[in-house]
Amino acid sequence: MKKYILTAVVALATLTSCSLDEQLNDSIGKDNPQFNTLGSPAQSLAFTYTLLEGPGSPFGIWTLNEDSSDEEAKPTRGSDWFDGGKWQQLHLHTWLPSNPQITNSYTDMNRGIAYATSVLGFANATKQQKAEATFLQVYWLWLMTDHFGQTILREPNEADSVPSIYWTRSQAIDNEIAKLEAVINDLPAYTNSAGAGTATKNAGNALLAKLYLNKAVYKATDADGKPQVVTPAAFAAADMDKVIALTTAAMAGTSFTNIAGNTPGQNYFQNFAPDNGERSTEIIFSRVNEVGNGSNVFQFAYMTTHYNQAPGGYNGPSTTTDLIGKFTSTDPNDPRFSTNIPYLTTNSGLKAGILIGQQVNQSGANILTRLGAPLSFTTAFDLASSGEAQGARVIKYYPQYTSPGNPTQQVNTDFIFLSRAECMLMQAEAYARKGNFATANTLIGQLRAARGAAPLAITTLQNVNDEFAREMYWQGTRRTDQIRFGTFLNPVQGRTATTDRHVMVYPIPLIPLNANPKLKQNPGY
Image (cartoon, rainbow, N blue to C red):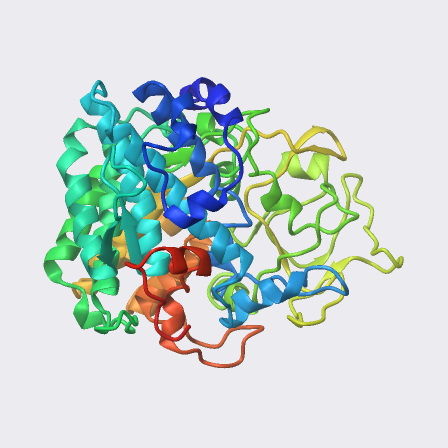
């Protein structure tokens, strides 16, 4: 599982943060001296895998997908979490091209595209290496298409001075599908979650399913590039048939995590626990992490917990009553909502899931605020001005400890990009979009049973959308799902207005926009 991380350590040390040249070129061409440190296709491919730390960390691409959605916000707390208004902009859909989270994410995507493309430029790369690189290239290209609507690409070995290939989002989705389909049979076979750090055939099938599922979204675009709100009728039956076949293939060899002695809730959260790669049986593709490899997965817990908890966190992001209500209105005992994990109880007093009410430490004693009041998280928050205990918190990728009360930032929790659960939900959605709610109901019923949740009738697309939220919350996918289901522009806690459809893509940052004549600013910005 860890082979790519270990072979890329030396190469990783050579990477610096994004340079002005990278922003200007919107890519890294073969002329860039950074490539000289990656002298073989194996080294280059290994390094390209390490770049998945970007979307597997909580303050870049993940933030664009979650802050803007109905399940996460970062309220300003006194002087904390204002930062020039960038977090509020994301939740309010009032962002500007200069928002640092947008510009950094754009650069991360272009860097990922460029390094994946570089592997394809090696004449001595094997078919499998090229197939894995193409998978990674398509993944990054799809992120660019999904977030920015315009995609830039250079062919392997083209100099930085060669004009980039330019695709609209309608063109991009067709090209991305074609690229991945051309190499799917050259990807290695899937073994288990411990090998999910490699792009396998299962991973390729899962990503292809996601591309076909979202294809109608990218085709629904005005002539000037402004995204349309996609309608259910736009999802072609042939594309949904592809999703069904591809997700079936992607799930082969996986099963719901079921560890002896665990409750269903403990099995669910085992997918997000330390050593999840070795113990989960659901992971199809992940960013592998090891102690000492520089991963930021630890910050998913640190960013949301209070200063006096363990970990003593940043007291920032909260979830919304919109997400909470999806549990309380159907099954408030759904273990995905809240579960006791012995490892967490012993080391911190935390629960896994959504934290509401009085918080306790590993001894069971009540935790206090900085002013000595009981630390009792409320569901209410004010985006512009909240107290330190306002807003429910989330523990999904849960912390790692060296001893009770002593968390560590050196974690070996892998970040999940593609999983059995998401594939099952995508398949259920495809059946529902074809009008077969009976099969969609069966699939989601199987998922809920594995999680220990009560049965729930699935009779509408909104029912499917809500199950995506309950299963996948805080995993960096919610914005994309909401756009596909047509709910992204709706008011949510902390945002009372319905927003304009232009915000379904982000603005192109100004430096690459001004440097590349092929790019044009997205409508509305």
